Image 1 (spheres, rainbow, N blue to C red):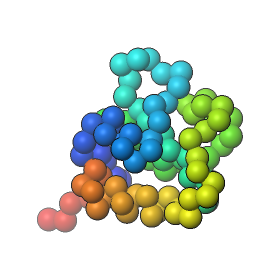
Image 2 (image 1 turned 180 degrees about the horizontal axis):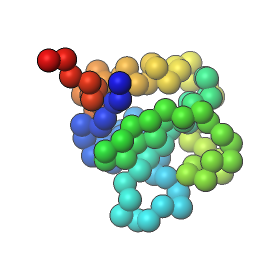
Image 3 (image 1 turned 120 degrees about the vertical axis):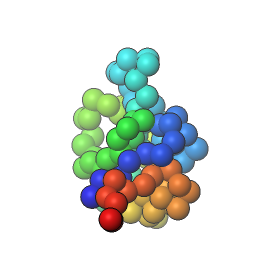
Image 4 (image 1 turned 45 degrees about the vertical axis):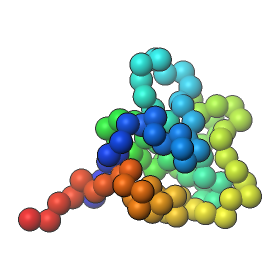
Length: 94
């Protein structure tokens, strides 16, 4: 199963996502680092992914957008995004 965005990637800024660095200006991609579980959420206009957070990832800033006091893990954030209608499953039952 894959989650896909239902809104433009820029809308994810409302949830604290930051624009990826080192990408062409017209590329809409955003990230959010989650300290609890060390995950990085990545979104573009057509893709949503959860990656292991690697400190030297070229897509994120040197001082990554991460609130260490945040008690949520990545699943809590993904759940909130689904609940807000920003993500949907690519799996459809017939």
